[in-house]
Length: 84
Ligand SMILES: [Zn+2]
Image (cartoon, rainbow, N blue to C red):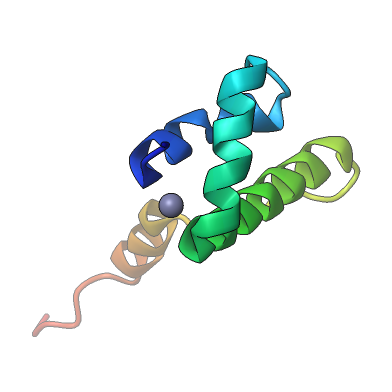
């Protein structure tokens, strides 16, 4: 019987169809009896799918974050507002 921890360890190999037959059976059996791990499996698959989408869809602009250094530089350029 597979534990939830082992399940998580096997998850990646399972999705890459890299598990030997008997381990795969144990994995499938765990899915049948353990709803939390089914959720985990779904979440994992979704994450992998989204990750692939980002890689394959390379036309979009990269995400832009306002760098904190830039904000600091702008604030510094304004100068301190103390007495002259
Ligand atoms: Zn489980």
